[in-house]
Image: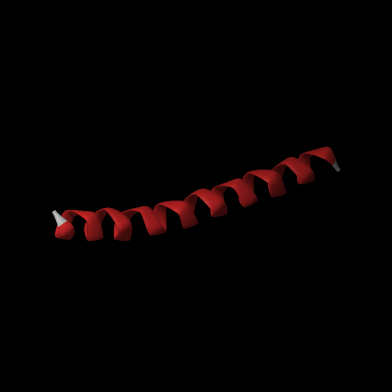
Length: 35
């Protein structure tokens, strides 16, 4: 139970970073298209 919880946390951490990165990239490209 605890091991699966730790695995879930370690998997969720990079996912949140990837999500933030993709959002920043999308906003960057959006600004580039506006210019």
